[in-house]
Length: 241
Image (cartoon, rainbow, N blue to C red; front, side, top):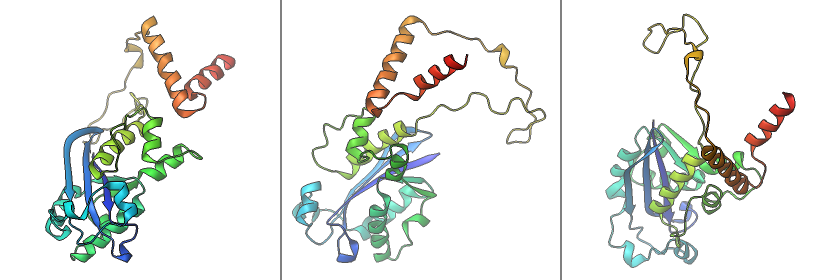
């Protein structure tokens, strides 16, 4: 599965007021691995940034005047995200700017270019209701260093969000799925043999591994600010037993 983490910086808050995108950063993830393939563009907006926006990204009008306009690089952006699942933090903000820029050069809306758009902010709010879910807060929660983030930057923020997204969606896939069902078939239509789980070798954890596991759970509890679900389930199992 190909995913693109995307972020933008802008001259202000609303494209309806003539504000433009000044930077786009995209980071590629394939099968939950950051590939190192990315797209990073500075854009000439042909206007000044609002003081508040300039304080956030630090991209001056003089610096941006040396870079191409959106119309000149729109095809690079469209090609890079084509067919991918795109993940954006607070997607509504970036999408209104992307759609405005695309419309200005006669191109269709952004969601028609990619397979799907996911808002990582909404996902974080579902996982951590009532907590701060800014990118900085999520970096702190998941132990991702953002010490080098003195200003917002589209590529830097996309790189951080890529790590946050992988941590936030980390889960253990089942090793065995539906092996108990007889006469099942794989995707090619070939019959699957019944699997005997009793032949799996069980390797118990040694004391050092158990200690490392407990330390990891301590870290999870500290980051979440609440008891670890794993430990709670182990207590319930021991009581039930």
